[in-house]
Image 1: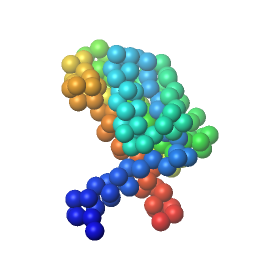
Image 2: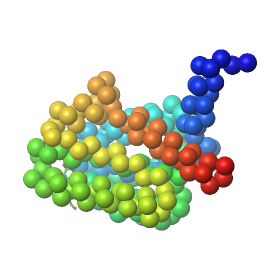
Image 3: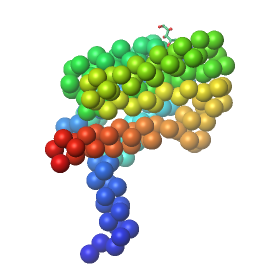
Image 4: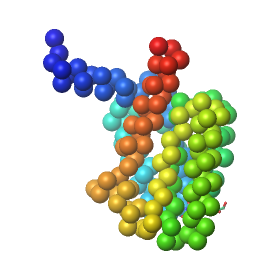
Length: 165
Ligand code: INI
């Protein structure tokens, strides 16, 4: 009989298991590439650590954060993807229209999720300055890609358990 610790670990593993046919779409902006490339790596590593292979992940690039919601909508319309992980970096110090970009982008990403019922993960770093963006993306400092990957997997499995469980 497994001990409580082992049972908890098994439950955690089940909650974060990737089904063979699941394809996770990653939409990442090229703007602030030095940050978003780290986030892409973090998400890929996170998905891989829960059993993803190359067939389970597809990457799509867009120019900036403002373009993410439309790309996410196109992806959702195909019905091919179990989740859409949106990655970007908007830095206040470098953006006079910071609020405009952040509000449009966050509302757009949420709208796609609600409209299509596809888990749509907001992995867009919105920071005051470059240092904060680096702290949240650099692999040794606290890359948030793993968190975004696990959030996506958890939502995919929650949806499955609600619809089929
Ligand atoms: N896009 C970003 O992803 N991050 C930013 O910090 C940023 N700044 O600083 O402006 C940014 N702007 C581009 C924007 O997302 C669109 O690509 C552009 O407005 C064309 O639609």
